[in-house]
Image (cartoon, rainbow, N blue to C red; front, side, top):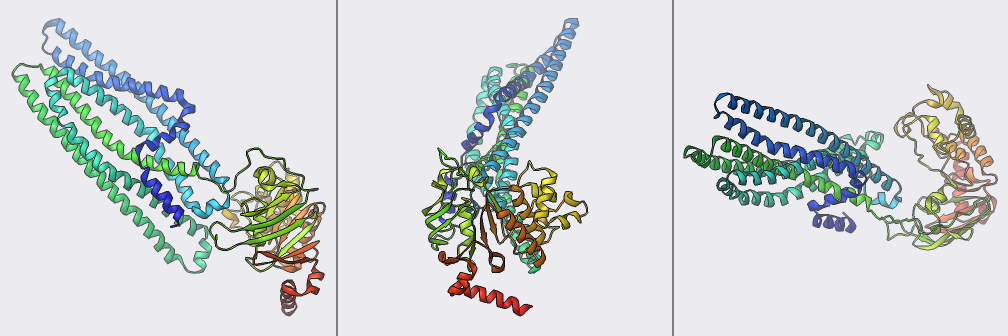
Length: 600
C-alpha cells in the first residue's frame, strides 16, 4: 500500500461516523417534496400506531358496561379500531411507495454522478485504484444506500416517533410503571454504544474486502485467455478465494457482534417489561388501575420495546451505509491531476496551427523516479506526417498521451499554435483528434456501432465508406449479420487485426484534423497492412499525423521520422537520411530489413 493509500485509509478510519450519511442530502434536495410527503405519511402511520392501544383500552373497558348502552359502546369502539386499521394500511402503503421510489431515484442519481465523475478522470486516477473496486462501489455500496433510503431511515424515524410517543403515553397511563421502565434505558444504551463502535469498524472493513474481491475477479476475468494460456487458473482461484474468505471472516465477525448486541438489548428490554408488568398486575388486583389501562400500558410497552429493538437492528444498517457513503464520496471528491482551465481559450484549428513541445519533461505518477521524457523539443508543422520511432519505453506513446492531455508534463509546455494545451478544455481539444491505439477498445455492441463510436451522428453509408477505407468492409460483410453482428465483450469474436481495422475505420469516420496512430497496423497481415497504409496516406492529406511505430516499413514515406531513446530525441529526418547518418535508426532499420529479407 502506498503512502497516499495509507493516508487515505487513516482519514477514513478517523471519519467513520454516522454523520457521513449527511453527504446524501445534496442528492435528496431535488426531491424535497417527495421527502416531505413521505415524512407526513410516516408521522400519520406512527400516530395511528400509537392510537391503537387507546382503542384497545376502550374496547376492554367497554366489556364492563352492561345493557344496550354497553353493547353500543363496544360496537363503536370496534368501529374506531377498524377505521384506525384502514388509516394505518393506507398510510403505510403510501409511505412505502414514496420512500422506495425516493430511494431508487436517489441511488440512480448517485450512480450516475459517480460514473460521470470517474469516466472523465485522467489515467493517473486508475493507476491508484482498480477498476473492479470502482465498479464495486457503484454497485455494492449504492445497494447499501438504497436499503437505507428505501427502508432503514424510514423504519428508524418511525420507531423513533413510536419510542418518543410511546414513552409519553406510558407516562400518561402510569407514571409509576413508566419510571420503572426508564430504569432499564441506561442498561440498554451501554451495549449499543460499546458494541456499536466495533460494529462500525467491521462494517467498513467488510466493504473494503468486498471491493478487493470484486477488483481481483474483474482483473482475472478481463484477462481470462491469458490466465488460461499460462495455466494460472488454480493460482487465480486461490487468490480470489483468499480475498473472498477474508471478506467472509470479517462479515462473520460483524454478524456475530451485531447478534450479541441484539441479544443483549432484547433480553434487557423484555426482561424489564416482564418485571414492570408483574408490578402492574398487582396494581390491577389492588384496584389502583383498570384492566383496560393495564392492557394499554402493555401494548405501549411492547411497542416501545419493539422500537428499541428495531432501532438496534437499523443502527447496524445505518453504519454500513455510512461506510458506503464515505467510499462513494471519496470517488466524487477525488482530485484529478489534469484539470480544465477556469477560463478556457478556444482550440486553434489544427489544420493550420503547428504543434510544439518545448522542454517537456514527464514522469508517470507511479514511477516518479524515472523520466519518461526528458527535455523534449519538437515542432510538428500543419499537415505534416511525423513518425516517432525507437525502442520500447523510449517515450513515443508518452508523447501521444501528453498531446491528448491524459497527463500534464512536470516541466515545459505543449503549444497548439500559440495556445498552451493547459489553457483549453480537454473536450474541445479531443474533438480535433482521432486516435488508433495499439490495443484498440472494442465495445460490446455491433460492428457498425463500434465504428460509429467515432462520430455518433454518421449515416450507415458513411460508416461503410470508412470501413472500406480501412480495409474492413470485406470481413464485416462476411459476418453472420454483416455490420450489425454483435462482436462480444471487448470484441472477443474478432481477431486482433480485425479489431485494429475497426478502430482505424472509427478514426477515419471521425474525420479529425489531427490523426494519432499508435502502432495502428501492428496486428495486420501484409495485404491488409498495405491496404490500410494506402487509406491512411489518403486520409493524412491535409491533416497533421503522428505515427508511433516499431515496424519501420510502415513509416518509410513519412515526411519526418523522429528517433527517441531513453526519453530524448536523438535524431530526426527522412528515412534515407537517417539510414545514411548511421546511429540508432540505422541499426534498427538494418535489423528489421535484414530479418525481413532472411525470412523471405
